[in-house]
Length: 106
Image (cartoon, rainbow, N blue to C red; front, side):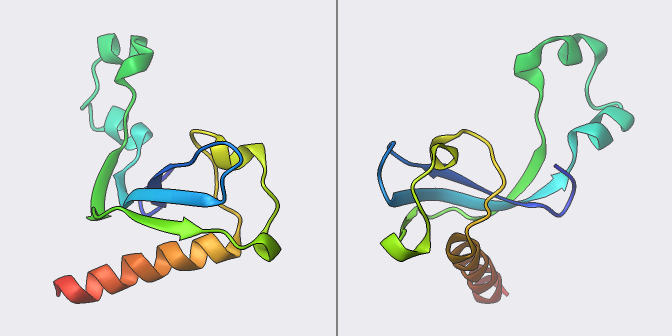
């Protein structure tokens, strides 16, 4: 993950076509940049639970995305914790929510 990447937090029951999106944000600083800027000590790096990236959360209100039958098969990747979203239908909704939120706040 690098600065500028769009991420979203979601919840999804295995086999369900409903994705609950809990937030959308932009990566503000990558993990590597945090190490370079000396924000993470060597002791923290040794502890896997201390890894983090800095995110600016833009959309904080939960909403649901229903995936139509014709827009993709159910795969195990949707139930995964961390993955790149490749379904154009979902990408479009995430971008729409992100940009609409941006214009409302300005």
